[in-house]
Length: 105
Length: 437
Image 1 (tube, each protein chain N blue to C red):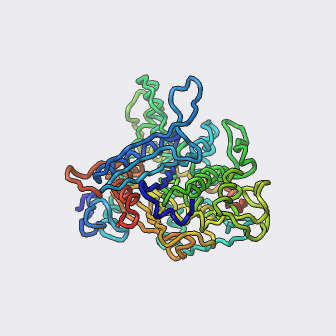
Image 2 (image 1 turned 90 degrees about the vertical axis):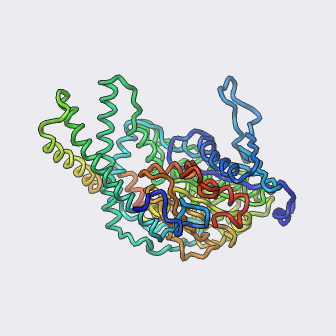
Image 3 (image 1 turned 135 degrees about the vertical axis):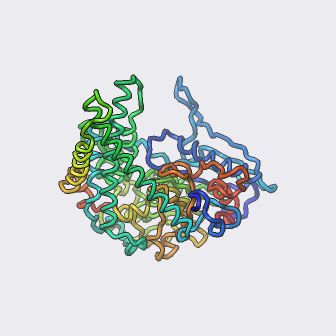
């Protein structure tokens, strides 16, 4: 695997650089895949932490709540529900209204 | 001094440099101070001798703890760079707009989350045009990145979930650190909200005060969107630099959302410019023959035409940008703005740029804010300079690269000169024809 910070020299720009690459090259694609991988890991970490920490704090006697999975589902419901509701009901009305009606650049 | 003699003036050659910051809570000159260090390092790595002069103001506040830098029409910092027997003076100006962001309050946080979580369903903005200018907007056409509207919305939905979940975790950690360990941990959620609110601010019709205060518009932007205050800072600085006859060429380096600010400043039609200027600056532009009389306004301008400007008075952008050498955007979300709020980043059919003007966009796929810019590929270069997209490995870690473009450590001990972005920028400033090749 190509280290993410060292794209192949033949795809770099000029003769001096190793950090630079063109947009449509294998180096760019590797870098994009590396970014996706990091996003997936970050997402999993955020979910895990939230699923453990939030219920643990509500029940301060235990570090790990016995019903972590149940809490995780509940948390996922809260997060997904909140995002969905925000999008559907658009409580940020001022900005939404401005986007619809404000024809000023 | 005669404009025609600018390019052939004896040494030291003088160039202007405008730095524009992105989202954040920067103090005045903080962005300039942080980002110019990398470029100074680039000059030094090239073997040049560099002398830095801070242009202090003539006066300072009584009992102040720090000296005051010059922040008016003249440069705040001057770098004298001597390389191969030639001396170049780089005069640095900063466009600072962090103070336009709304003051932090609980209500700001509430409004932010309402807005942030609903961005995925943001209604498509209708066609916008600058009322009163009569200059038509150039339609950029569909984005060549190939992302459908549904894909963008799904990604935004997931991002909303991710940040909400992370903020719950971070919130709990902060409270736990304070209560259980008695640590005064910084509130990461508050910082995050304050940072990203700058994006929200750019799409608001009104600036809000702390708490429930409804209107906190700046006095010179009453009844106008807060983004007009931001653009005013940009356009006034461009005016200062373009009208400075000692500069043989000038550049703009714009980071993050600053690239949107810079783009707006560059693309604002000449009739719109007048509303952003003060009387003294317009007088200078008149003296420099950078103002002409165009057709009368077709309606009220936003921002409004000042009372000291005659109807139809227009800034001649072709004259303003005559010595404009180029724009560097790094970590720029411009393409995302085009997808979400195309009306905020219009290009007008008003020719202004010379073929020598370059636009270099540096992106890093690990910096999710940045991206390749292709929307304006087919527009003539006189309306919008062709974008040269350049990938750059700013950091091996997600999002960190966003603040590391000009502050990148060497990849290895034997890293040659030119392998860092700051080196290329330094090169470009000194040798515009060879830089970034």
